[in-house]
Length: 98
Image (cartoon, rainbow, N blue to C red):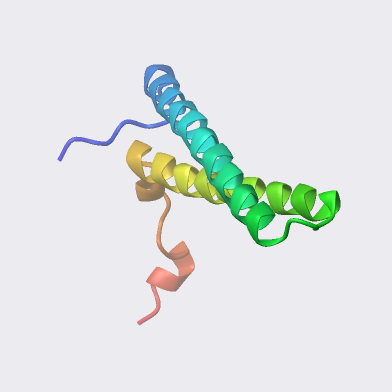
């Protein structure tokens, strides 16, 4: 079985990080569109709401979507580049025990 590319290899790392940044750019656009739709619905249902509600909602929605995307993107990056495979599942001293 061929070893997976690793982030220790500069070419593989550059490629992986380019893919991650491209994913994040697309997901930032998705987060922006989602936030705009949610704020529009919020405005239609609450026309007399304070501007503070809209600021808090926009920040919460945008940051939640981008944080979730960023963390899941890092999980995929780690798995794809083989970083998960090089970490042992359990400490060496626990392997010797029956």
